Image 1 (cartoon, rainbow, N blue to C red):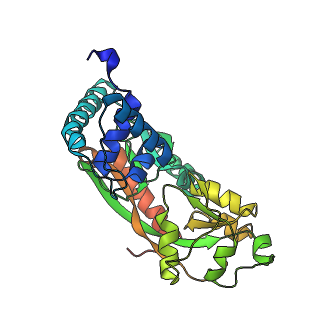
Image 2 (tube, helix red, strand yellow):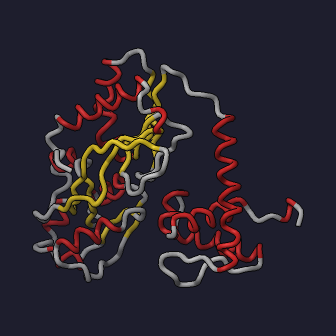
Image 3 (cartoon, rainbow, N blue to C red):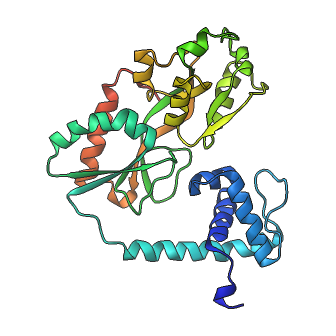
Length: 304
């Protein structure tokens, strides 16, 4: 086989991510594509190499004998590419702080406060690197991250910050309409707006409400909480918020909470950086400032 006959890089990335994480959903979130796209890329790779790489219908994703033999080589190849690319990338300036943050957190919480940090540290040039995936830290392109640590990677320093609270929200007009939301069981009468990389949010809340077996209707999927919240504002259904990132909408009445039940998220928001960088002055300054902002925010529950 010549190099021109090698399978596509896209298929190899999908295979490596699924084999490493053990789940098509996690691989889709990591690569910022849909699960169906991952499945299509895996099937195309299997066609190209002429063997089946995953056991069909297995949960979590189970490699076949051929897949187990192939995975170490593919993983090592990507590890080599990652190390080489990191070595090639110019070092970031000492006076520049690149913050990796989830897009909803950036828009709904961090950006309104960031002016204070810039006023305190005018010697630093701050850049935001936003992501629609809330749990992975891009250590190759950012100094520090503010992420929801669903999983933890080796070689990184994590500082727990707080846990979000899960609360369904909807527009006042939907709450006042026919088939209103008098109890959680009424959710089956309404479209459910969910974030497709965080499907466990609805499952967690419904389980706490004693409705773990409820079939939700018309599940409309988004890639961020901010889009789901916007759709809820427009009366398109019921969304799950990740507190405190819908504070303004709730205070203004653009969104309302139809139920009293609030459920703490399974995972914590954390500050993260490379282990070897944790004592850098600019990272320590941001860590101190961020923890202070969280401590004085009345919308954040201060227990872990």
